[in-house]
Image 1 (cartoon, rainbow, N blue to C red):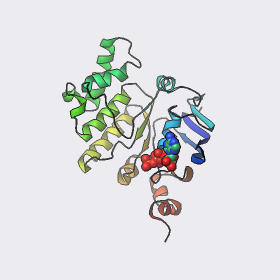
Image 2: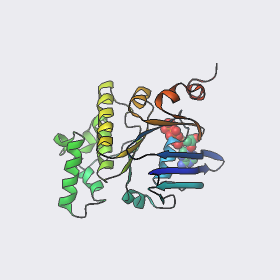
Image 3: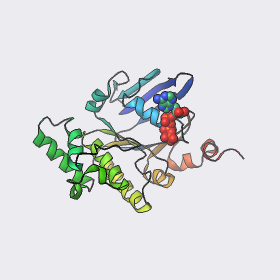
Image 4: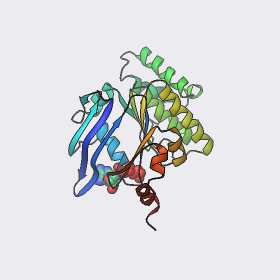
Length: 237
Ligand SMILES: Nc1ncnc2c1ncn2[C@@H]1O[C@H](COP(=O)(O)OP(=O)(O)OP(=O)(O)O)[C@@H](O)[C@H]1O
């Protein structure tokens, strides 16, 4: 049984095909990168996997189970968590309360949710800010909180959507370390990221899409040297 796969996954928005016949598999324990120029369909792919948009056709299987007709909350319960490109914490709540709201996905009691949230905050090195209001956080900490909220749902597969955008080089290095630590804790990762040196360093394999379609796949070195990928990013000579 494959850990995660899509088969002929397609999404039309009216006359626009945002995701066009995408087939890929992710093995348990991998960091799998999804790259492509702006508007190529990466976030739409995440929205299909997590049930935010219904697919037009094709299948998504998680641990052998079809999930493409399930609601967002059922997909989350099955063990797929995600972050959003634009982090929107619950601004009037503290950092701890934000993470607790996600922990309630599996922890029915408040004390259990708090315990899980604290464990995640320690893991993400945010515990010292647990009582801070979410609205006062720096971009770096807001991105970390976004990851912490996703981790608190206890996912087996975590989708990270541009968690490095807007970070300083030092924060990017720390962010990459956190992503590796998440993988080492047993969570499989699919990551969308535009910062190429990060993606090339942390991913085991990559899929590159353009206009919703696959243009290349392979190891970071294979994809970086692929002519179609170079042209998609830089244009033809
Ligand atoms: N809800 C929607 N309704 C109509 N069109 C949409 C919708 N969501 C996305 N699109 C379109 O689908 C295409 C793919 O968009 P998507 O956001 O998935 O790209 P992306 O690769 O994530 O881009 P970026 O790297 O800029 O975040 C774009 O042309 C976009 O305008």
